[in-house]
Image (cartoon, rainbow, N blue to C red; front, side, top):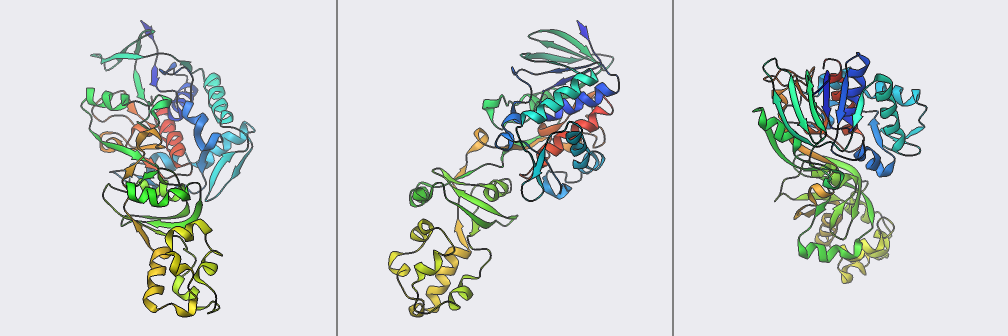
Length: 390
């Protein structure tokens, strides 16, 4: 049996960060992963450019049953700490919008940084390794049986992620480990995910597929001002992905397609002899106007519109209400909501309160960030926190 100080299961963002930090403390670290390549989700993130953090990280940008849990790790390892690491590796990056930081070149730059840091710190990564069984021994150490031999360690870190994007190897492994050690797991669901529509709505909006609009999207829980994208399955785009994490089946969402305008006031200020369609196509794509306006109404001159008609038009564009059918699920979700109960872990070390030497970090934990680099920052911060102590 091979003996090491620390075993980390999962060679993703959180696991690699934890391995780097533990290795710097002269711990003998082994990172195990069932995949044939480390950091697969890092490589596909941000459209291949890796949105690795955000300038504006704040605990309010995270969803959890315990909203205070993330504060400790995020305050001790900040976006600026990771940015410093990126600069040290001379990786060019830029701010896109809303504080989101992306690589100028490819996501591979961030993965190369992590692998180089692991190498320098002496943290070994072994791939194609399937975990078969794990047991806690009488001295609180752990025995791990794998497809590539048996291991013994003092500290065991679970960094195997959530259920999002199963084609990247996502699995419920972390939740099964929690179950094995009687640690509470909150029910999980897909987050940052496109919404699907009921058949009649999908058919009505099908010709809009590929069109994007800057909108204010809201429900009774939250609101986001970013673009939406009509797709052949339903609605996507940043504003929809953001709201999806706050949406429950059966709820309606409201979409303001002209958030800069009060439509009634705007129309009253226009030339009375102009046709309604002419005015609105200056503000929205022609195809959108054709779908949302009755053809007869579209041809009317502004001067002929009644107060009720003006109110109906405003409701259509300032407050379009629609009830999604569901989400596209884990297949396309960027994150998993729910997971390991934060109240079962130490917010300072990420160690399980009832199982000495067992740690959970990253997406497996019930901390889910907004779109825009927040989930990567949680991976870096939670991995760093555990890495100081394992």
